[in-house]
Figure 1 (cartoon, rainbow, N blue to C red):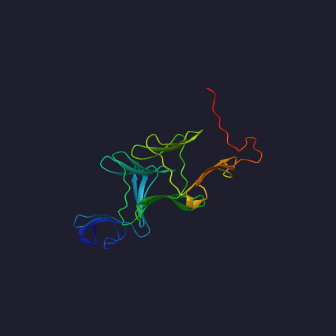
Figure 2: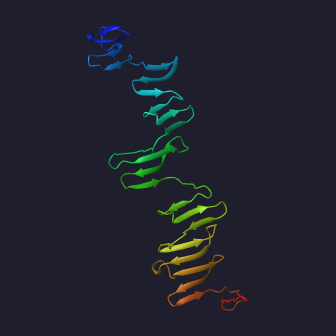
Figure 3: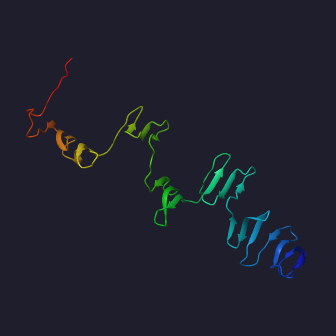
Length: 238
């Protein structure tokens, strides 16, 4: 204990009191206090002889189940419990911001092959959110669209729904096809004139039976039909 290097510096020296690079604890004439360790060594922090954290030349290490706390009331805590890592906020909102011009925020995770993949990107260049992996909604969890959840898409464990409680539900495409569950047979086709020879086609068991034409409609009857021209008008009895 004493002067380190000159009379204006007090400290605890671990090697040479005449060398200002060899101190362990130093306070200079300007009131700045320094902790120092020899090259390749660490500064260890302990409470009741238990390691809490250490500092080396390239890292600050906080040990398992020890919090890094931010805020007067320890409102934000970062810690690792030996198995998992946590970012925990107790007060207000938690913001993740990237103020870099055209920068992104990427969420990455293991890709099953020992590497990392980006699963979601908040794209600061195109101003959109990019989703790079399949998303899964559990039963009865709805994907909603509109300020009042006007459009809802969901599955209730038995059936799937596209639900539009109010207003118009419009499907817009130059060509639109409905196929069976096996995806090997058509049920209906809806074409703009430039995308097919007919506007609308309806199918039965994969075979076309009804279509619209420029002159009206056309009904296709199987050769084995017992219903004459294939048109059956059925009026239920009163």
